[in-house]
Image (cartoon, rainbow, N blue to C red; front, side, top):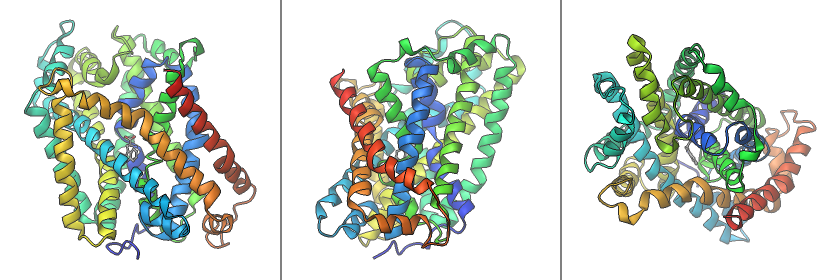
Length: 450
Ligand code: TRP
């Protein structure tokens, strides 16, 4: 049985926008700069880019192939491709479970972002003032509060759910085609402002001049986790999107576009943030609070323009988060749908469950009332560093070693109508040998080396 609720994406362009919408998100604009700052700037960037192209992109193509070949969601797709080994179903289910956990933590951060957008619009953010530490204190107080963050995360979830209910083509594809170009324009505007500040070059040096002595084993694992997280691969979400790809879509080309797009936006986010941070005498190692604690100081110091830039930035971040959250919710909904549940009912059910987990995670952040449970930190580490590489490793092993090569090549070449040349040989080698080996080594080294 296929995903009967939908005909999938309408055009290749729409499909690329939707998948790029999934990939480009908080991971690029909120997470990438602070992780990069924590693990040494340029050196981290270099390792990250290698992982993106050697592992991340390979996984994306593989997930698209699995999805489009079977037109099914992960758990069923694995079994359909390898009926003799139904145990692979569990890899699909592990991926979905991981997506659920990612969605929960994603909603927490999206809620913060929506709140900061709102406070920029009302001017409340600007009024907090420029005293040293004022924004840190504000963020700590806000994010560990009991009501506001939860209310905003629920509003954000409501928006996400509404679009997923509207369907794959009418909801997801349409909103992505609209939002992705806007996002790029907003980001470029912020980059221009950041680069024209006095002292911006120090930020660029920090981002682009690698100092490998600062990179630790944990940093390498973090780069891998970040590469997978940022491209939305490993958990099967792209298998679901793959099942919606048009039959004539060139998977190699589309994956390359999406990967390049995602990487360029991550780098642009670094270019938007680091120069501004240095120009205003702030530290790049601010952790998860970087965009919430450091950037408002930067916006404040920009005088009259600051307010507008602040609104623009948090709008950008909210929109990016929206198209990503949509993909996570869609994957979970499609799974329920395949098991016979109506789209609407599936969305409501997943939303209710994830709302509870997200609210609990939010209440356990910082000094929140549930802080002794450490739920936020556990979810953050699990979904940021550990679960994605594990899921990705299993997925790529399935793809490289258990799927028929002829099926793969047939799907990549659209049944022989598209020339894929030598690249397919290279790609297959990456998928069979390089990506699994690299995933295994980094994963084991990251865990052992702690
Ligand atoms: N890639 C998104 C980001 O960078 C997050 C995301 C969306 C994701 N869908 C996913 C991560 C599926 C892993 C799996 O913010």
